Each structure stands twice: as structure tokens, then as C-alpha cells.
Picture 1: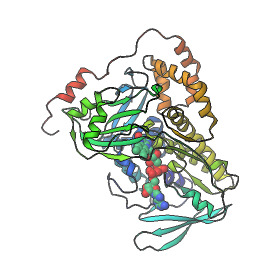
Picture 2: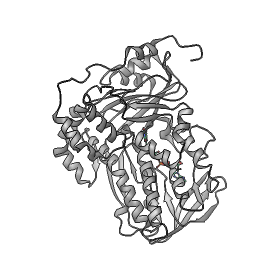
Picture 3: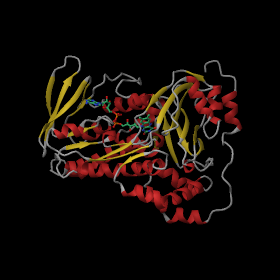
Picture 4: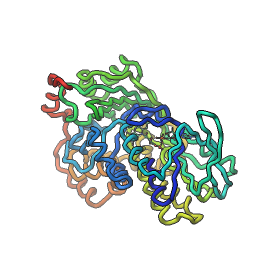
Length: 455
Ligand SMILES: Cc1cc2nc3c(=O)[nH]c(=O)nc-3n(C[C@H](O)[C@H](O)[C@H](O)COP(=O)(O)OP(=O)(O)OC[C@H]3O[C@@H](n4cnc5c(N)ncnc54)[C@H](O)[C@@H]3O)c2cc1C
């Protein structure tokens, strides 16, 4: 939808080809199985979405999405310890994925020049290795195939994209691909928030310490709209969370701290446990292809998908849409359009790619099939710096602000090496990081209170 919105800023007509029937509201659908799991929209992505589609975050808030101040409204055990709840420097939106999608879809499709063809599948590209002329589409109701012509084609078909196969039919060689797969598995259950905590509870996360070189285990309580908590448990290869109810509860207890287990013990389950394994870091370097159709672009998970624990996929897609916008502005109608767009998109996904893979390589049995030379450097020298910054960020406000900026994809990763951050690292006072969960007495009281009648 963001790609459609951006294309429409430069072109007269945009057609969105969508395999699913799209619901007329914030409901789940078949083609987006990941929507059952927690989705954080970090401020780096939220601000970009608002600039492309003004009013998005206001509508999200009006529909009950929770604005979580980083780190004010976060109770967080990181690999390095409990995070001090400093005043907000970044934020994230906590909402169900169906609400995020519905809000963006409704705003985008309000433009009558953007046409949606639902229950229609893209099956092939038309054209040749220098230029595509459109796509072949198939109507899923009557099975009829037709050719749709277009000046520009953008593939946004997600992780399962068949773009490489479609290109093969045009004699375009396959793109270089990197995969870093920690084997992370997700298990998610939705609860009714306990007591009187609905709309007034922090996000709670518990991570294990990756430096132990044991499989990673993670837990997250994401307070969303309608007084609900989306609770996601996840684990890397060798520590996958079960998807039966008893196993889910037991896994929560075995996290690095039992806080999440204690809190969900107070809450009422509303759904069964759902699992997902579509979580490997996978990046395709289309911009490196020497042969490429000059008007074919890809963005979103079809270019780069990330381990979802870092919550970066949607924000990376928003950054990529903004990069597409810049390329269309400069190069629409020239043979450089695709190259400039794909290079911009590659830069847009580089930080989230590096942040996720540089961490995931340390988990046992992480499968690496990648040429990115930075992975080698990380293994040899960068880890100590990351550890220093992240440990200082638990208890030192300026370092915490820098870490928050990078985590929120609101500041480049290089900002962690700024003179201000390096100075703050040297000036460490002996203030210890919190050594117990940072949930306040008032928050505990809200979670354990008698529910109000209408809760
Ligand atoms: C378990 C899990 C948790 C996640 N958590 C977060 C998070 O906390 N924060 C975050 O930012 N990101 C998160 N992500 C990542 C996020 O879901 C993706 O980055 C994002 O959805 C990518 O958007 P996309 O439009 O590229 O692809 P998708 O959202 O996957 O959309 C692809 C669309 O293409 C359609 N389609 C596919 N093939 C065809 C075809 N041939 N013809 C027509 N239509 C087709 C599908 O029906 C679908 O509508 C998570 C992912 C997973 C798996």
C-alpha cells in the first residue's frame, strides 16, 4: 500500500494486484499469516508513514493503538540487564497488524486513481531483460489469465516472492542472496489485559543473554487496542516455544525472568496459541545484477526479511517506499529508474539487516549462507563495542537515547559512534543499572485490581 501511495505521487494510475480478498476492516486474512503475531511499528517507520500518508498515526491512536514511549513505557530485560525507564526520546505504536494494515489500506485506497484487484494473482512478467511491459495476472475466481500493461512494475509480494523465477523466464540471472537463519520460532496468544491495566500498561519484554552462546529465548507483552495483550514467545534453534497451551505457559516461566509468566497468569486468554517459522534474515541484492529491466523494482520482504524479534520489517518497508519516492522524483522516464530505486532501497534495508544479522550469528547453530563481510568483522571485533554501548545504555541517558534512535530506525547505526556517545561512554558514573524488574507499584496495582464492570 505504501508503494502504491508513492507510485501515485508520480503516475496517473496505479493498480494493486492482491491475491487475497481484503477485509473491509481490521480483520485477519489468509495471505498475511504473520499478522497473528505481535508487530511493533517503531518511530522511524511511523514518522515516514505519516509523511507519506498524513493522518495515519492519529487514526491508529483513535482506534486504540497504544503509543509506547521508549524507554518511559517499557519494562525491558535486555541481554545486558534491566533497562532504566528514561524519559521518552523515541516511541513505537503497539497495535494489531490487522489494525495497522486496515488503517493504511483505507487511507491509500481513498485515492480513486489507485485501483485494487483482489483475488487476483500475479503469475509472470511481460517484456524482456531490458524492460518489462507489465504482468500476467490470473483471476482466482474464474481462473482467467490476462495481461496488464504498465510503465513501472513493483514487486511487493513479500517473503514468498517469485520474482527470481519470473526474471529467469526473461533470461535475467538470479540475484545474489544472503541468508542468516537463527531458526527463530514464534508462538503467540492474545489475552484480555488483567484488572484495570487496559490502555495504561507498559510494553514488557524479556530477552536472554546471547553472550552465553545458548539458544535465545524471548518474551513480549504488547498492549494493543481493545484492552488486549498480544503475548509472543520465541526461541532460536534448539529452544523453540511449543504451540500447545501448557507448553506455552511453561516456556514463559523459563524465560530469563518469570515476569511475563506472572503477568499472563493474571490475564484471560482469548485465542489459542499460533506459531510461525517465517523468520530467517534473507536479503536479495537486486541492485547488483548486471542485467536488469530498467523499470522493474522490488521492495518490502521481497527484498529483505528480518528476524522479527527486532521489529524492523514494516519500518524497513516504509524506508524503502521513501527511497522509491526519491528515485521516481529524480529518474521517472529514464533508464536509470530501477537502478537508482533499487540502490536506495538497498541502503534503506542495510541498517536493519546489519543489526539483525550481527546479533543472530551468535546463536548456536545459526545457518549462515552469506557473503556480507561485516559478519566476519562482527565475530572478530565489533561485539565488544556493541556490548559496551548497550550496557551503558541501560543506565546512562544520552547513550540510551542513541541506542533508542538506532533501534527505532530513526537514526543511522553509525550514530552510536558519535563523539557525544563516545564521550558519554568515557564519563560513566558508577550508577548501577536496575537489578529487578522496573514495573512500578502502581502498574502492579492496575494489573491485580478488580476489573471495572465494563472491562
Ligand atoms: C512472526 C512475524 C512477526 C513480525 N513482527 C514484526 C514487527 O514487530 N515489526 C515489524 O515492523 N515487522 C514485523 N514483521 C515483518 C513484517 O510482517 C513484514 O516485514 C511486512 O509484512 C512486509 O511487508 P510486505 O508488504 O513486503 O509483505 P507482506 O506483508 O507479506 O505482503 C505481501 C502481500 O502480497 C500478496 N501476494 C503474495 N504473492 C502474490 C501474488 N503472486 N500475486 C498477488 N498478491 C500476492 C499477499 O497476499 C500479501 O498481501 C514480522 C514478521 C513475522 C513473520
